[in-house]
Image (cartoon, rainbow, N blue to C red; front, side):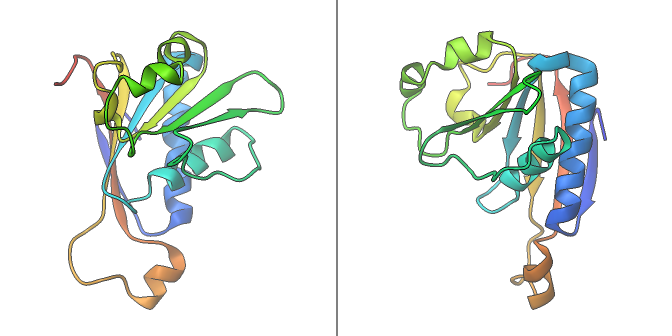
Length: 164
């Protein structure tokens, strides 16, 4: 899946597999310094996609959204790659990002994953991968869908110029 593609996921397991595939392609294109933005409404599966990315790298620990901490850093067992997972949902002013050392992290080696990237638009320069997750409209999920995870569309594209 890449570039400029869309897939339908019918479960969290499928979403994790798509995340693994996206990351594999990102590593081929960008090496260990990819910046990946994840957009979508609350509950769309952004963190589930990140979990799939991390699992594909061999990470076995818990993967949760860093909604309150803003940043989770994952060091892989072989120490060959670092992953920085940001959740900027609670950011009210981009100046807050200076306090967590965002510029230094962006300049360092490692995969950077951003949920709610619009809150850091002045910091996120290209090239980067933009992933958009969307939940189909309609009545709430059925009991079976809740058990398997929600159906969602996942699209990924390579951004070649800044979008303001």
